[in-house]
Amino acid sequence: MEQSRRIRLVICLLMVLAVTAQLLFYSSELLKDPDNWWQVKVGLDMLANRIIPVADTYSHTFAGQPWIAKEWLSQVLLGSAYTAFGWSGVIVITVSSVGLMTFILTWYLSAALKPIVAIAAVIAVTIVVSSVYNARPLIFSLPIIVLWTAVLFQAARERQPPPFWLLALIALWANLHGTFTFGFVIAAFAGLDFLARTRLSQPRILAQWIAFGLLCPLVTLINPYGIKAILATFTVTSGNEAVAYIGEWNPFNARTDVLPEILLLIVVAALLITRIRIRWTYAAFFIFTLHLFLAYSRFQYLWLLLVPIVLAADIAEQFPALSTRQWMGEARDGLERAIAKHYRRITGVVVVGWFAACAAFLNFSTVAPSDTTSASGALAFAETQGLSGNVLNSYNFGGTLIFHGIKTYIDGRTDQLFLNGFMSATAEMGTAAGKPILQKTIEDHNIKWALLTPDDARIPFFNELSGWRKAYEDKFAIVYINGN
Image (tube, rainbow, N blue to C red; front, side, top):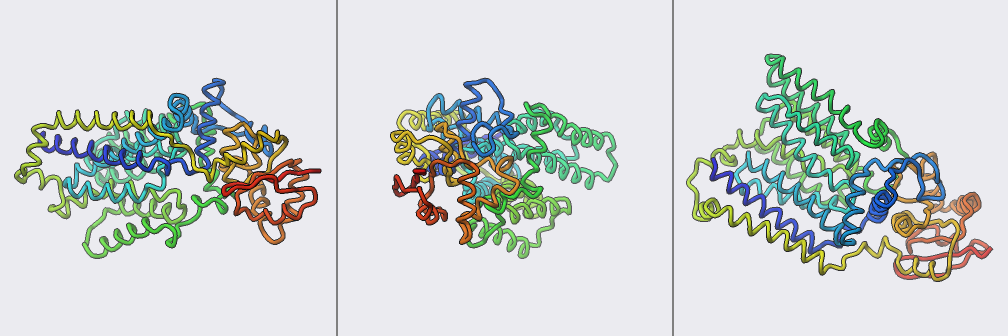
């Protein structure tokens, strides 16, 4: 038993080192989202002002409207990393969170499935969910949601009460990312699985599960915004108009979501071919997360990460050749014996290697957000020309405007702002009948200049508007100035 744990520990650490090395090598991919800018800026402002925001101060269109930084702790972490090491620090803290998730996922999968199978599963899953590896608050929720799911379903499987230390974990989660409300749902499925296994034969432990479920939402009120943090997480699923216009909130698309589709088809084929039997509680969880997978591209990672954790033990039980239990009963080969014998040295080398890689990256990397979201040339031009007044910007430039202290027309905070027809009207500006809407918007919001991406559908209208002229253009951004 101890020998197998040592081997599993080394494997987990090696997986973390491999993931870290890959992500650091492709670090620029982690800063391609326009939200990277404003998430860091909000954290910087909170650190500087020691004030948690309750109203919008970053846009001119919704200035003063209620807005909460419900993921404030993640933003403070990102801001702190930026203060210490610039964008390289933001990358390292992002990679560290992915590494922690990888460790937890590998550890729990290898507890049920033999190491080679667990490694293959983790590699497949981490590659397919890599689209969410980004310097945004979501990244800090990944290790938490994996640990939360693994521990709760393990407790249910062993007919044990839920570990109440998890309440501290979900309280932390509530301050890091809005997906903490999924923690309630996961706990409910795990509790339902415990009930299905025990059939009321353990009322005392069942009472503990019920108490745990009731305490979950209560402890998440330990945040600067109280109940508002919970309510804010439901704005998207309750009919938020921004959903139709933002790619990550769109439904699954097999033409673009190629890797998730491949993995989905592999899982479906395996279910059809292998005669695997799934408990009805697991099937319900499978269907719930699959619904999220199909309904919102943003939530594909939930199905991809959590279903293997839930099903691993049953797969190992029904297919012993894949199980850790059978692997533990086999004779160790030379490599495994060497790993078990020298695991302390190997662990030390791997940990030192991880720190060395991160330190080298912090000292020598010049990584920065993508040119497609930075508009660096256009903003430099705006500064030299002294452009002022309200700007009309393309959505992808909202983050960089916030970061540089320029109030936006629109930005990535559409879960709470830019609603009540605003997003719809903005989208209609790019249609054939959009010119009058654009003119009205310019008048209503006293727009003095525009910062647009080269593919912005409103550009032809700006070329036709009286008094407007193109003042700057590069391959990433175009600036129009109102000469009236």
